Image (cartoon, rainbow over all chains, first blue to last red; front, side, top):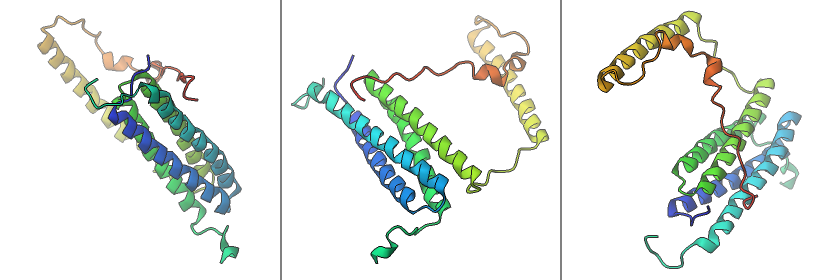
Amino acid sequence: MMQPLTGKEVEYIVDSISNEDLLIKQNAVAATTATNPAIRQICQQFQQVHEQNYNTLLNALNAHLPLAPTQPGNQ
Amino acid sequence: MYQNHHQALLPDEDLAYTILADLKRVTREYATGATEANCDNVRQLFTNLLNTTLHLQGDLYRVMKQNNMYSTSSPALKQDIDKQIQQNKQNLQKTQQLVQRITGGQQQQHPPGFANLVTPGQVHQGQLQQPQSPAYYS
């Protein structure tokens, strides 16, 4: 059963979004500037996977949003 | 200055290595996220992402190795591995004796030569659960 996110869970999800964001950019740079075709190709694929991961994490935040309390408490 | 837009500022191996290093770091962070999760769905989310990231890291490592961008350390010597096996067999015996003293021999005892029974194949028999992706996240 889905439960409201704890503060810690939100922090981990948000940190993970930052990580995926950085990896999208790193792979975009490598896919464009690397001279080795194998590196270019794998980085193009990775860029897409990290975009999916980014969206998955964002969707998790969205899915839990309705469960979040509007007042601080000990729930 | 825009003519150099697509020119590599870093050699290929450095570009790939920075991504590999970050994939290793992110793998650890997903593992931490999973162990710290309260909600089962969040644990599953991080477990799935851990698995995906591990695959990416393995794939990149393989490509780097195939392209001579990563030097693996030399093979461990047979005598060094054997020394470790012997030391750890002795250690296991001591641990079993300690456990027997703690439990007063009430716990079911392992058959003699327990350490010999564990083979690498058996270690991997406890397969991980297949990741299930919660539908609402994807």
